[in-house]
Amino acid sequence: MPTQHAIQAAVHVSKIIGSQRAKASDTRESYWRRSLGGVFSPADMQIGEELLIDCGLIKLQGIDLVVSQELRDLFEASAVELTAVICLRSAACVEKMDVTSQELVQELNLLLVDPAFIEKTFNGIGRLFDQSLLKEIGNIGEALVVARSRQELKRLGRDDLALKVNRVSLLDDTAGYDIEAPYISDGQRLFEVK
Image (cartoon, rainbow, N blue to C red; front, side):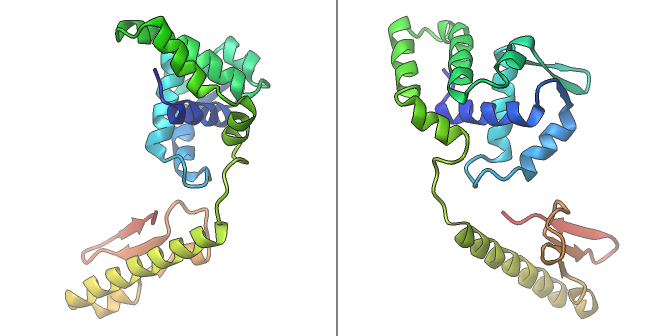
């Protein structure tokens, strides 16, 4: 039986893919960029994608993730309905794990205790978090990486390169990385701070 967290990730993945198809590489890149309040890591999103594939709701065809007709029909449905479909589709896998139908029903009841709460949670409005605190933590983390990178280059006798460590996120938060720091030989190291 998939965890509630995996099912929630699967719901988010279904929203990223959309109602038709999407390039798998673009979808997976979105796992790194999609703001989900720090609740779902890219690895969690990958698990959600695999759950949708295991349930037959999406298929990997060549380089594309293709949405099944059933998922298309559910595209406008609530997260609770999609949760139920994923749970029922996963039931076949549960049989292989020697779980009784009674245990399966208990698991479903745990997942669907309060549909309104689950709907809010899936849609990201049931969580309270302080965005300013997250931003402050991110700023501290980036400052530490910049300081460490400069310190490392200075220790290696490259004060000139230490001056080239750049906190890109202050100018562009869409670059896919926060800090660039030169290698001693040639090229740039790109750091994404989490």
